[in-house]
Length: 313
Image (cartoon, rainbow, N blue to C red):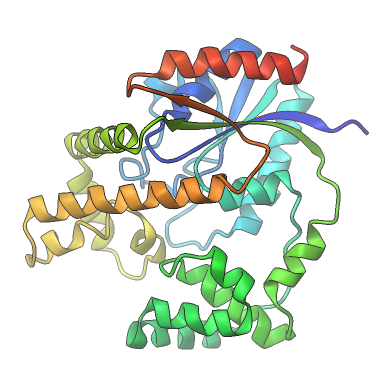
């Protein structure tokens, strides 16, 4: 069976992925499948920069706003659903376009990673969360590094759920999750991806886009959205979402709004750097970099040439 041709639009936050994905869909008759670990959650709209109806321009967007914030949602869940969506879009004669900035979701999908079926130990998970609260996230990451350094090297200390899961898998099965993932990658991928990465020629241009993105979010009502979520109990997804945790000190009356906004901009810049580090490890990405912040038209023209050259369109 011939591999399914897909287009992947990836890159750091605020780089223009949504606009480019929509333009590609309009040009080549496609539909967009989101690859964003936070846009899956209902109600978390402004902080995650979900595309508006005006931005989607009538192009169907899948895997956005379908999970309750109280519900756990893993990369394994995403991959299973994305496989089904890609098949559905392809079977209807449309071009599947994967667009987002969650590198783990994208790499797991296009590499056809198979996930472990190790059971869960909820009591152990709670113990690990308590450990992180007592000694810090970094200490828990170091605990994982002692067990499985390869996995630890790929994780940020704030990604508690994945750190805990990796430790949990080793405790239950005695196996490293990195070893299981390496074995799973031996299975052939069903896709033939054209991977387009967005970036700017200087880091300052990207940071300028991020600054504008944060200001737009605030004007759209980010404060109200963040406050409504932070009032709710035990929503681990909110704790991870950039845009909520940085504003919490303002609602707790321990920091000024200006201080929290600056911290939000800083956190977003740091996140963009981590995204770029992840994507630069992927040698199949064809990078589209521009020398100004208003580059959406240039991005499309360059990307259209890439797709036509690689996809026989």
